[in-house]
Figure 1 (cartoon, helix red, strand yellow):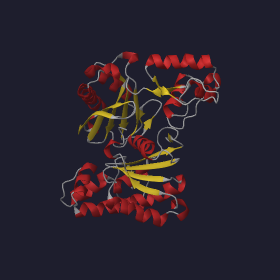
Figure 2 (spheres, rainbow, N blue to C red):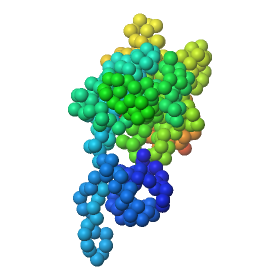
Figure 3 (cartoon, one colour):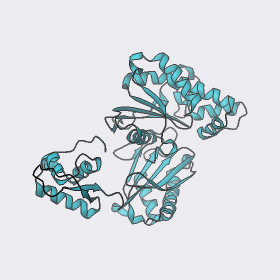
Figure 4 (cartoon, rainbow, N blue to C red):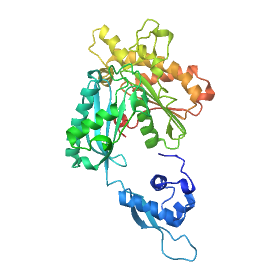
Length: 384
């Protein structure tokens, strides 16, 4: 919500006032009147709705605004204690889920095996079970949940919450993820059913990781890019405080840019030569398996890298060079202030490879003010 324009005058609703208070831009009744142009009575009416719904509370008295003295202004605070949210981050072979406060603090968390190829019905039903157990662990009831967020490894139409032709999510194309997960939550945790079911928001995992990292660690960066390299490759871009999705959710799908090194490499999308077919965690795992090293996914490669496996480290650096070559164009186009590498391969060997080709191929003007970094939030980025 950072940076969202707030409507002025009679068009400013209760949600706009809440955003002003939550962001700290206006935390008294007088400040809200000045920011929106609304009358004192109208501000009071809309604040009453927020108080009744539990979104706001009164804090300590602020400084006296008038030089003539008088009573201090009562400050308004966002109330993060009246509800919780549920979040889940799906990868190809495992998932992470949590109960979080309205300010993003994790109250209970679970990580386990969940295979995306088992299809949406099985995966979302199991997530409903996880959520029920997590609420019990956190000491919260289903009635306290005001929404569910889900990150998926595929392109998402943000208007419908449906994935669109996802290369590594067979059986998910066009599925009603929102409705199915809301029903699973109702069945296993006792949440509301029907049209009034718990709201579910679905987005691409790289988009959400980028948004979480930017909001948490780089709030003043106006152009932020994150590249997730796990079983597949995807990118999330945050511009002006908002996720950039393109016209139908396809922005950032850099794993399917064609590269000459992969002319003979068949990608899961059905084409030859995609970046993901030569430089993803899945591609590195296949190369390792061909030499007799047991590896089937990006997470297996990550474990090998942590243990210092020399062949895995060499292949990760080579993959980084392939990705860095593509990122030279991405950086020239977007001119970001921060380029973050995340996912299973995000470590020193891969990052070294990225930097070698990126700084070699991109114009100095494009990289003069660029920070190339790794994830701060790690595996929690999608949840946050």
